Length: 265
Image 1 (cartoon, rainbow, N blue to C red):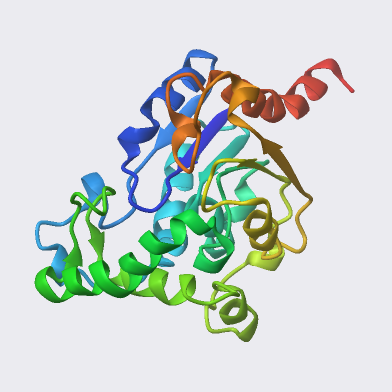
Image 2 (cartoon, rainbow, N blue to C red):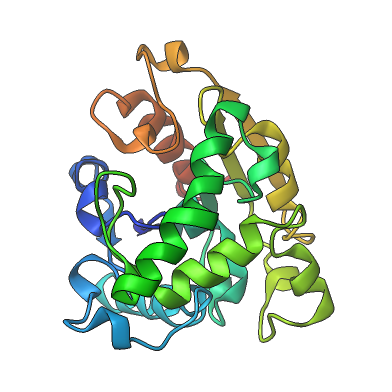
């Protein structure tokens, strides 16, 4: 099999290296990549970069899928989407190339649906820190308060607009404001892993996000840190050392259909 790993906002491809190597050691061809403006795809003059947040789904995710298919011709391709990596599948013109989607910590970004302890930081980021950094630098730099990668203006401004609305991007999607898109054409099964200590992707925001994919068979698996023998998972911990039992769950789910085909079922 081949596996494409699509990152969360502000996470460079190297963050998923341990997970990717684990999958590769079990026979998968795995591709991690940086969206435009992020990590290794960051231009020298980030302030001058012209882009919009959905470009990651319209341009970068499709290009990564195409590259993976070239590198692994004839293999079935599965997708692991972390956070926004699960949000943007419907923007991909070639989304039908996936067999299944494993969503990890995927939920809408509306701040009011998140854990109350997280709300003060979110509102400070959207209304204070982010706009201030945009005025000073033309982008949001990585630092003590925002610890992700540098964020292009086009990412921050659209992300902020969506996260301050209860419907996130769903109303814009329904109104046609986000066309072209293929959300209602996604039919590959989606299994979404939600963790009890994740302040962002909660059972509520996770279920809400999945309504963007009305034609896809969807399932939410709610898990707690101690289910995997760890103290914390949060929004990013699913890809850290110690989470191999989760990775095994994902791999087994991907492998189900392949095993059935091999046995002639």
